[in-house]
Length: 247
Image (cartoon, rainbow, N blue to C red; front, side, top):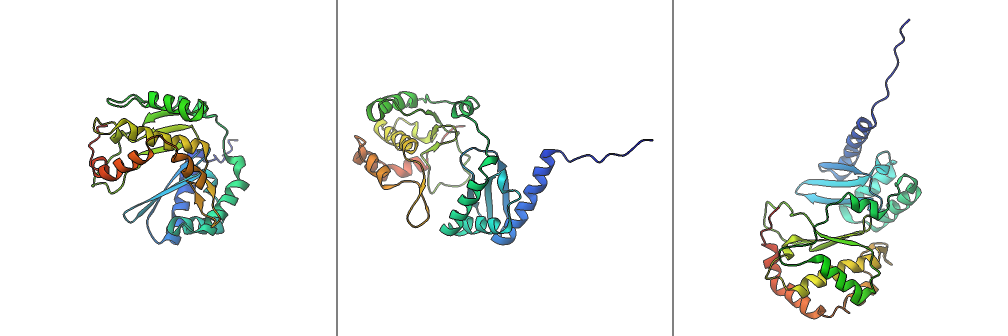
């Protein structure tokens, strides 16, 4: 006699269902539309941004079935940057760190397209020289130009560089690859991101995340053209904001 067996849902389908549930849970607390993207990162567990009325939230899959108090803390942190909520989220992540996969930075870099040589500035040479001059060659990281961001409205700000602790990759905004951008300014941005490899994000006395601790800022001032680079940025920020960057 044929027997009907129940078929377990596919893992991807389950993730989609839990993601939609999480979107509803956050939407109720934020009282605004929410788009959730689930990832399996090994270092950055949570990022978010406001896109007009919509909250875009990227988080680790450990949050999918989080209890109500964690979802409330997540909403409080996204909406207000609440320090107590941030501390609660850190404790939750620490308790659930067994769900974070272990992948070496070298393995992660193999999956990335690294393109450090621009038309005007060679980031690989800049990184190599700074590494020898300031860090005795100890910075084990890679560098590349980031992808050209899709811009539909005039920029009000620009993120000129970033550092991923997951892959140990520095990304530089392609707007810096222009003949009018002096080499010393590009060097300063690269140097700044290299310092993020040395000084990791920590929690300040007020409970908030501290991306640039005092020792980071003190070290940054040792850059040989620090004052000149800062002055150039103040005088030429509009040039970078309005740069046309091809994809």
